[in-house]
Length: 352
Image (cartoon, rainbow, N blue to C red; front, top):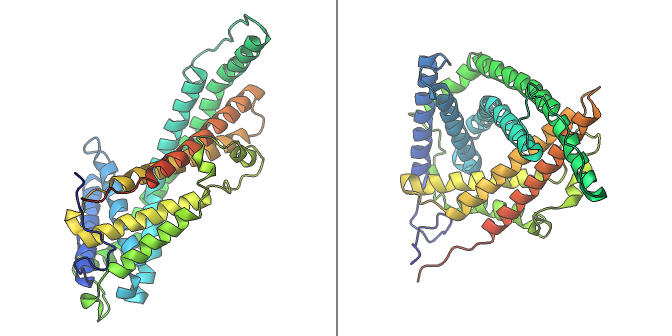
């Protein structure tokens, strides 16, 4: 039997007003300050195996939720304060997330190289090409695998150098940001928010449902505009054309999907505001969000492989391995789009 949950975007549901928004923002501000205190107590260094990582993640988590609420429910908040806070929170969240993103990207690419080549993709491993046996088709396949095997080690080493350098720079940037006057100004405003939310005079008695419904409608419209017919197949070869070109700009097909991911997050956070701590897990939204996260990760990994392939004076075998890796990640992009389509088209079973 299906459970019947409160629909936060249903105007007929029990009224939730600006007071609930104020409570949510105060709670998120308190979480932000708690994470900041943890980060300062550890000095950004590992007092425990996960503490600095958890502190940065908690800061980002709260910053995203505060920023999203300021966006969705901005008519109920002081406009000057809201418009000043949102970009600062976005800056902070983005800055703190880069180091982890580079680390995860490198791990993803090295694992993919290992899977594709069947070898360890670090330069310390000596690689020899196998002998060709069998007919022409077998010989061709074996030669391709040999080229990939030879190039995979150098491709892995190149990616490791580039992404480790990027991660190190991101780490330094995050530390500088957390010690900057800009961050201290944000933290001071969040500290005030923990006790005083700048609502408009009418906000405490204004229902939140229409604004939450508008956030859901923006998401639905964006999903409707996606090329889901193309995404109905696990792989769309047309998406390789741009990625294999020398143009370093982002893949043009990816932007609408990234936008849907952001709108889905806004919708999820709006549900949290309306439902508070009793918010039931919406499996459909959760699964769709996971697919869009995989889409983003694979898209960015493909871009990193393409960028590495543009490195001057690399060997043909290295370039070949990076090209195969790029194609593999674009396959992953298409698989994630297919998974999103399957998740999104599942309708919630109505209660009897």
